Image (cartoon, rainbow, N blue to C red):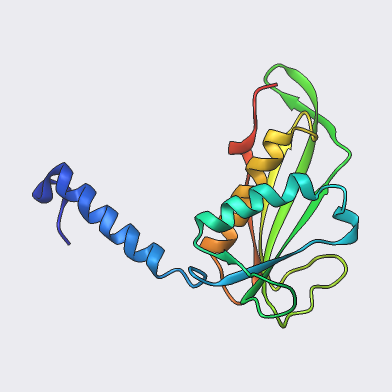
Length: 170
């Protein structure tokens, strides 16, 4: 192992960047094609869901499948859940807070996604917020869940992550 001191800061940065690019190139989904699957209950929300999903998938190196019909390498879906809120003790007293969750699923095309949207593999990003309807928080959470799902893709399972970095000032 070469120390940062032996390489100097520019050398250490170069070594880190080289390792990072190798890791990105080795991503199991880079260059794969995808199709989005949206449930009928999301039909009025696709204008909010699809753009950040596409941005995150593009950044991860996936490409949308062209044309109609089967043939994509993976199917990407999104499940949005939230609670009705509750009183939470905060530094400034009590505040009514909501928990919203976006689960980005990535499944092989042959996997049948059940009605509840459970993917073969997914990443759930959760955010506790005073306003569950902020579009900027939604976009951030969606992009976070999708990009983490693409980066951490495995054959099956569900990974839970914090989305608190998506919280915006009121």
